[in-house]
Length: 45
Image 1 (cartoon, one colour):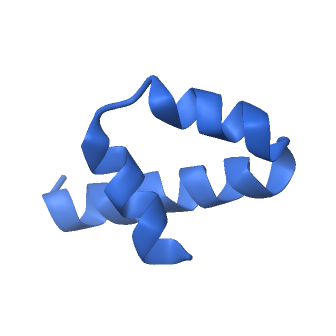
Image 2 (cartoon, one colour; image 1 turned 90 degrees about the vertical axis):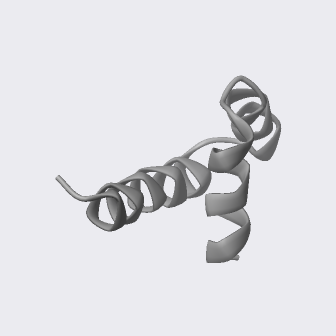
């Protein structure tokens, strides 16, 4: 799987999580992940 395809999938999962869980919980989950994940979320907002 190529990086672009993987990034699209990760963005979709993070977006879904953000919609389904409380902001505080989502922020906590995101804080546990490498910085690249935060960047992916920022590009979807």
